[in-house]
Length: 174
Image (cartoon, rainbow, N blue to C red; front, side, top):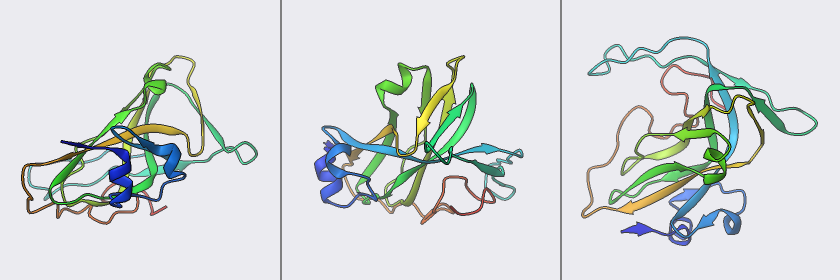
């Protein structure tokens, strides 16, 4: 069963919204742009996280007068303003808003595990050869929450209670 946006906000599963009325959708909650980063080093990924190291990132500045950022084709890490507190009987999926993919830009993110609480982010892939202009707080994605059959133990990894999506050893906290 999918939880509607009204339920997700009412149950405080999604918090730190810019405007709850504008962000609640029939099947989820819109996620808005907090910041954009670029990677500045490689990452290391292994099987058991013994050698895991997140890639270093650096936050790109918004234009101080217009609060916008122009992105050329390429891959970026975006952090959303909203945070989540996923119940142990739910899971989340992040999808791009249609206005984004219609503009030649995609958003990709992993599963938001049951029991996870903290920041949300995603990979923003600009395919449009002319780039994209984004305003701070632009609606980029939507989180859709699904009720699971039963409660599970829940997420207990290193990203729990994170304040940014850069990951272990990534950028400084925002």
